[in-house]
Amino acid sequence: MDRLLFGLGNPGKGYAETRHNAGWQVLDHLLAGDPLATGFRRTRLVHGEVADLRIGDLKCVLVKPASFMNLVGPVYVRALEVYDLPPERALVLVDDFALPFGRTRLRADGRHAGHNGLRSLEQSLGSTDYPRLRLGIGPMPEAARWAEWVLKRYDATQKRALPDLLHRGAEAARLWAREGLEAAANRFNGEA
Image (cartoon, rainbow, N blue to C red):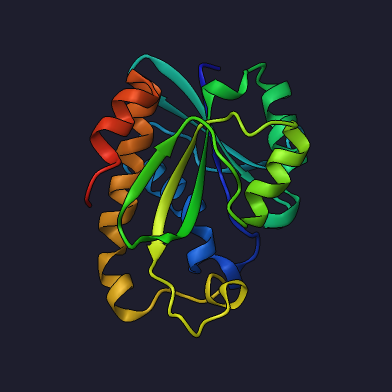
């Protein structure tokens, strides 16, 4: 395997269309755009669902962990072991309510910024050095509690703009796989 795309989200139909599952939604968008890709299938190897996708000449595996957001770290580390990849060849796709809706930001490292999925990942990996693609789902209303707000479905305005966010996230992931983080960040870290 050449690359791994690791989407953060929560399992279960009740979470499927929530803001917190933006990482999974981008993975689904990637697969929908490639008729040769395999669909997601459950596997015990990484405690989740995996799918295979080609990006140019690269073989990529997409992973949706079966654990809830705050327990994804061990699944991420296990996926790296199973596919024999270092963290720099595995992109984490994650929602970010601090970014305006539709914006994306690629980074090679950084802190979890209060995101429980990233916190779990960093605790299990023992490092903050791993590439991540942050998907803008904000701004969050001032009076909202973040834990409740991210677990709600997109509002009407966001739902209309969601296809653009998913497309932008998928294209950023593809470019990261083909040309690396710097090239993808130069193109996708600006305005949406």
